[in-house]
Length: 243
Image 1 (spheres, one colour):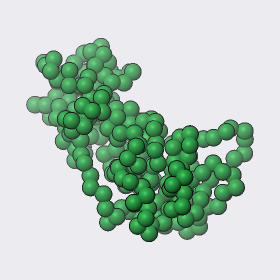
Image 2 (spheres, one colour):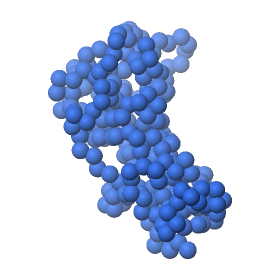
Image 3 (cartoon, one colour):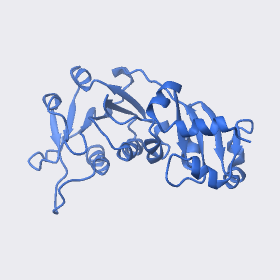
Image 4 (cartoon, one colour):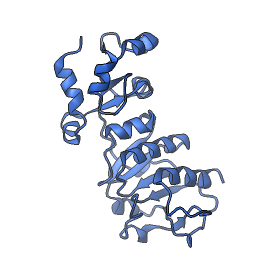
């Protein structure tokens, strides 16, 4: 039987301050649970429903898993609808260096929405991009909604929080993304560099614009004012990497 202290811990991990202090975060839903159990992350303990335990029992460490009824799983969940379970996981701090970057990386400037961030991580995983560089004011990687919307891709994509001006001043090739329809130039034979995406409402910060070597936009055919940044990420990655 799981203790009240462990359930209290689960509830407390919705707060970034607690996650930072304890170096722990929560993974919710069976997709994320299975992904993190098969990753290099250190899982502290797992809580699942009886149905999930019976179906995936061979995937769990029998000495480190607790079975809880679906009502209480949903009640203690940090998400609106989770009846599968959750893992408490040790967070990982990754040191940034250019040597660790692949040929193509993503940079995110002041991204606020956790759902967008999680989907961008998933997009990066789909297109084989292993590294995302975030400005220091981006949403927390270990926010439960980021982890949930990444659908396990956070286990395969490295996320670094850096001063983007300092990173970009190191003579790297930067492609900026924009909604400006006058900047519809798609770089040809793009093989190496950093693709920069801006804030959901403001776009790329003025102080970062001088570092951009070329710009890319998505051709507009209808009347919508803008595209969701995570949707834009998928389209632009496809345009650049599969052209």
